[in-house]
Image (cartoon, rainbow, N blue to C red; front, side, top):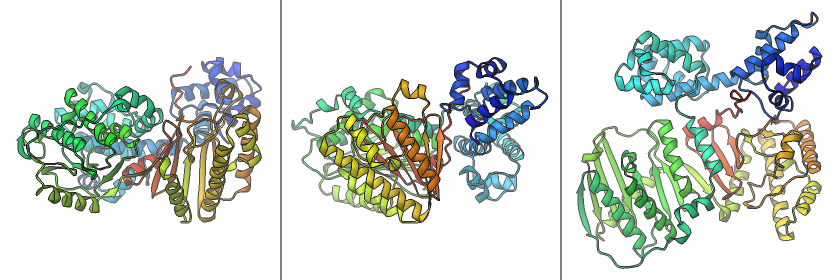
Length: 580
């Protein structure tokens, strides 16, 4: 039984109105109404849910036929909301964040806690749950408090736990606070994965182009003179070497792709706002010229920092001119390296890890040097793995071919949608929607073909594996406030196709009928989606696809194991704890 069904069942059994429940629980009638219609759901560990359970129990005390304790009602509500799954996900996410923020060594922790290192890794990935989560949290808290006693480490802990550093000076209090946070706490940092998705969801490439005046950018062709070879020392000179590289590349006649790879802490450069603006202008000039960029990201850094770096590249990814890569495994932690090269120039850098400001950086335009650096870049690319594949409208057929080829392999698939699934919409209903939205005949044919591909794809998935879809079902009030659009992310179609109420209800009926008649298919109806423009498609253990419906329509297929695991284990719940 789903949460909204259970809530309505309690009201029926108690023979009370929603207004009476609102008064008994101290919540507003509007909140109760949203819960009853499945428009929203409370967080499983929120104060709102606790008050709701208390209200049901207090109303039950007034009848002798239905004795209900607050504890039993709360347990039933949490079960309906999938609280066990949610709690396990939180423990795994917090444990992983703790290890990353404090740079804890899994092998050392495993020995101290008498665990197998692979067991800890599976807990971090959300693949295993400790038999006794509370005991596990206490053990990790005790180990961390003993291991991390420096002022810097305790400050990092305080920021993570949203506490004053002075409250964590004592090892016992520090260990206890850590154990509580691992089980129930919200991180002092925002969920970096969710933040990345939110930024992608809200991003509008057209707004960005206007903001940075990319559409007005003109690549100059005035001759200029730079030294063919120069060695730089120190941070300030290094900034100049990078700007010279961008200028040489943007103004040259070469159309060779650009290569960038660095495991140096580039965020130190970004603190100089003047440099950051020039750097972004140089990158924009290269892309405006039409050059392709192979970017090898350094992912051997704390997860939150890694996601923050990827966020900054979102605008550039949207151009479709960048191929992101990464190198598997952890490389040496003693030296830092950098290699940028193009058909016009190259920059090579080296430093001792932790001493970035005193590195040595070589800039060269010498014709005898450039083939050497290109060979090095190609060798790195041969060893690199694709971080994600990016599909724009020009690669629609390639994206479709990838999906169908993968669908023939057995596996588990899951989709998190912002609208009703397109594969359940009938041709008759689709035709009515197209006509009501005044879509031209050529576009109608393109859309029909796209919906036919969607049906064929889901058919292939169900022949070889299982498929679960999560999608919002809007209440009448929510529908009236903002009529939803048909999901068109697979079509690279910029316009919106709005439902009217009759067509929406017909599509919902067809979806429920498909779920009832299709073995291996699971439909999960939620009150509303966590996002507006993103569809998330998960091939468990293999890859995660993120499709942006508009501004622009684009698909990212992520393959990095750590990113995939984080997205697979996300629980997309609407948090109602601040709404009363």
